[in-house]
Image 1 (cartoon, rainbow, N blue to C red):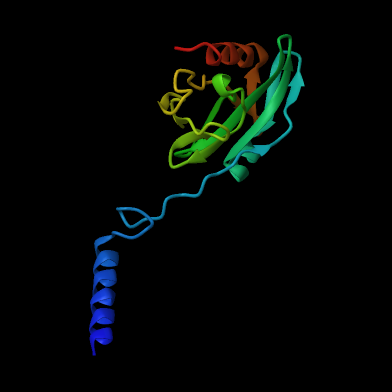
Image 2: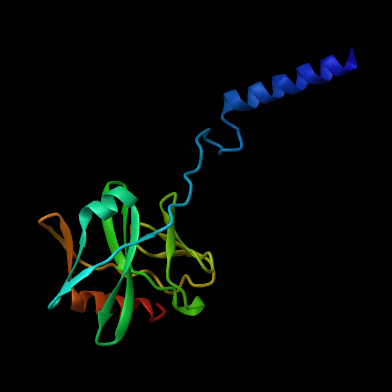
Length: 163
């Protein structure tokens, strides 16, 4: 008899918690989004223009690519957040890494776990917050995201300097 009572009480507690939205998926009853790891893609460089297919960002949500410049090979990321595409420098200087996952409106360094705002690139928490991910201006032309090579280099320079 005690076993049935305990089981009934546990079931009532679980039903109450689910009804209140207090589940393991979050306090609002919605599951946290899984991290979206970046997918490597190829960029095209022609003269002073760098381009990537906009469809790559639309399909994969989070991509990164490398660009050869006068100062060396630079990593760049492009991600979609709130129906807007952002292009940024893709480097975390203190931990000497590249690669960020998109998680619930943030960019999380795949190496050190430092968290940055996905829309602004500003550091939120972690060891490398003083190195915000600098934005790269772009246009969309013929289905491609197009950047100036100088803007890629400038964003990288700003990202590797602590603010």
